[in-house]
Amino acid sequence: MSTQPDHDFPPADLRPILHQISTLLKSRNETVSIAETAAGGLISSSILSTPGTSSIYKGGLTLYTLPSRIAFAGWSQETISNYKGPTTEIVTGLARHVRKDLESTYTIAESGTAGPTGGATPNRKPGYVALAVDCEQGTFVRELDTGLGTDRVGNMKRFAVEALTLLRDVIKGEAHNKL
Image (cartoon, rainbow, N blue to C red; front, side):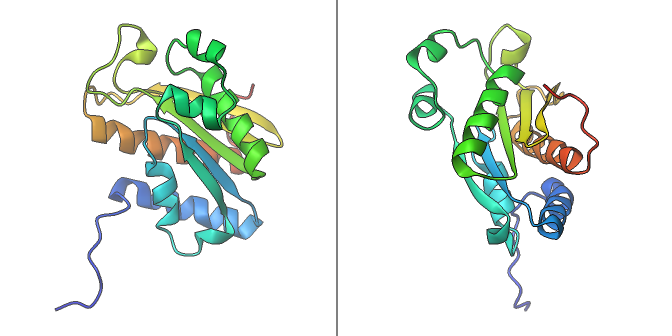
């Protein structure tokens, strides 16, 4: 009988990028904070499952509901009234606000439609995600469709992988979609 615990967390598809991110941030003495919506805390909890992350993780917010964005992300009732679903503009604002408040080197912001339900516009269809990483060099964005359709858990995991991949690309100077 093994004395090592058998954990299924973080999900296997996140482990390689988590290792890259934690190694990069630790070697550079830099920090990260998170503002996530449709990933539901998966990005933060995955980072926190990696030993030694207290030196790189400044905090995170799971802003799943619109009222939570008023309370913690600087939104107003007007912002909510004009809300048309996740966009790169939405995640840019989330990333900038949270980075300012938590004083991290980088902030990842994610907003998407995990499914199984959604809407008619492309940014409201299950599998769509908008991502941003804000840092001293600016805000870098990416949007994509996972191609996983209504697979809610699959989409959430892919949103987390893509968010961490964008962070890695920004840290390494390989991200190109800067606002």
